[in-house]
Image 1 (spheres, rainbow, N blue to C red):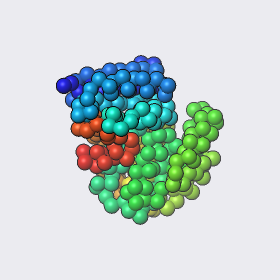
Image 2 (cartoon, rainbow, N blue to C red; image 1 turned 90 degrees about the vertical axis):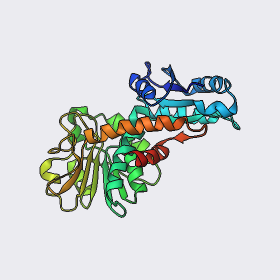
Image 3 (cartoon, rainbow, N blue to C red; image 1 turned 120 degrees about the vertical axis):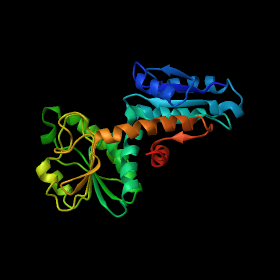
Length: 291
């Protein structure tokens, strides 16, 4: 019996990246739907679930993707609400790669070093930054998440987007959120940090080399930005827990390769049972086993 992945994508055109990786991970067929809204979910999911008996439902799984992470979370919730009794299939959320990317980076760091009790600062209120913060907290860190100062964003600063991001971040439980108005305020937040994660938009430099190289407490630096200029000046994208100026660096290319392995491993796991839910916590378990 064929393994069928139902791809529910919030974008107009379903991600070709997600579809190809699904095939590489062992799916026999991928049924792709674009422009999906929460109202579309129940019909798409139940019409698939009812095609096979309960013992065979592990051969069907649902993948939620697309750029809009908030909408993806709503669709994931609707998928789960569609299930009843034993009539359910495994489902995963990875909108804009947020879960697999964050899980891969923090798993690499957490497996190599004991982070318990460390002070961590994540710069960036987007989905990858917030998920990284939650996972660092799970590793035992004391975590603060900050906005990106407008003076670093320059012309790219949008006050309405900044306000929305801050509001959403503050809805995330058990995280300390700091809205920093300028570089001086961010520098104060970084004062005693041992771990820093830069999760800003592409091409925005957040940390200068002359700042982090001389910082007395910083030990580990993680950057997700692959577009020049990098988020952390003076590192290389391929830095894979490399020491530079006395700090351990994890660069974006060193995250991207293992991220693909985690992505494929997660898709394969979906077909092992019919009740697996892979949000950030579930993806992190697989990342710790994979990287």
